[in-house]
Image 1 (spheres, rainbow over the protein chains, first blue to last red):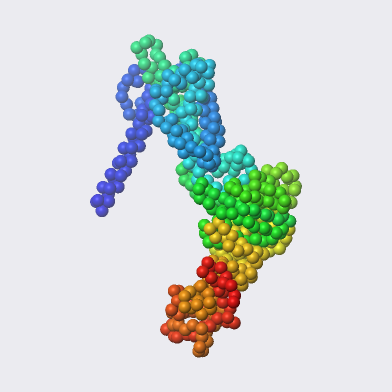
Image 2 (image 1 turned 90 degrees about the vertical axis):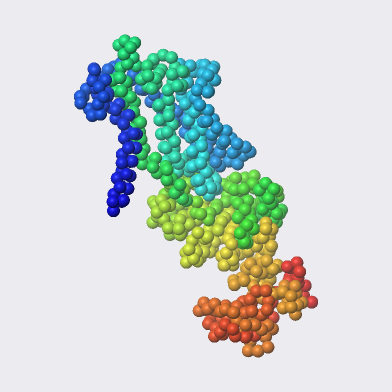
Length: 276
Length: 336
């Protein structure tokens, strides 16, 4: 009896601890974003004052909305491009027998092992060579490169699990590979597509290093860089209030996206149940 | 009305030969059944004819036209798969219409043909449902319907009944027989490991073993005149009894085959004597397992129920000397 009670208590204490650890930084950002003036520097765990001043100033501050739009455009393009390439690539990798297929798959996976900083210089040269420097395309280009290994790998695994007979039935029905991919496989792969697409979006949305390196002017920056470069009235002032407000604004689209696709993600994780 | 000619057709996966040179003529509008134990290459042979696998060597011709390098849809075949292979996200109607839509058929024409096929298979009521809302038998009908709609020259079945339960299997078997009667201009090839399906459906049966054709013939030819021990053992249920050594010597054969239904119990003076080990009573018939000193017990089929008790000594004789004599190589022994 007592042992059971202790066990239950310990269990929920642990759950609470994990939740607090995960949520606290974001919670602290939210309550800080509503504070102004010297209040910012008092440590409080519950909101004591409420003001939207920080939000107003960050939205009016120069190019923030423009940068937000940039982030949105870049992330969306990355997702679309990555999914298009990954779906066609994974069809070949999962379904077409050719020499060196598994070697190719392993190579693709190993690409994702390189730390960003290791390829930064080389990639910078490529971006310059292609004339993409200081354009949004440089970001679309580099993010797609870094997203593809993961996307291809996940979709390949998923596509391999789709029953071969369904593909053969489509071949007998006279379908070309493109028709098989778009009309037969895609509808079965939505859960996997949504999951990988969302992860690609989040990665592109949060990326900092490339965004900082490949752009120089304010109007082609993405939000993570903008936030990092927010400056106060003097060189010695760090505008915590506006930084926190901007951080909250940046998080909102992700939360909305996850909420919209939540059910799809969950079914994506259990999608092995597809049966002809 | 398409005839199919296979000329020394071979298939290898890497260094492994699955089909080792098959010559076979399938007549127009014939119902041909490929039968054999698992791993004999019967499904592979069907997939070669379908165009789902490349032929390694030899020629495959529909009528006079070599089709080795044509795609399945160019060959004009339709196929029913063992696992149904329906498109899970499409309704029954769309499943059946998919091929026609790809072939750019007119909307009215597609509707007419799908409805016709659905009528024939009595699945009209389910046209709006998804495959997951159907039972196994209904799914298999949809799969058959999808094949009918394409109005194929050659209709291929790859073990279509294996996933159904016993009662449904018999019912669907009858429907496939009816289908063959209705589509009497279509050549059909049917793969199965079940010799009852083979015997009941086939115009002719092709028995395969290790990628080689053992024997081709009508069901009765295979039953009455098996050209090898393998075919003799494969066709017929329960299996033919095989006797060797002293039991076969009397008949001047290396291996002697007698079907359980061609044996009778005598009051005395049978060809063989032995003790009853077990009797399986099925009501309409009874199988007696008798130890006559051979390697395996001798199986005897009796009409109705049998009164003999285990341990009893029985005398057995082949009816009208209805036995099959095979020589050392497993081929029928020369009569002398």
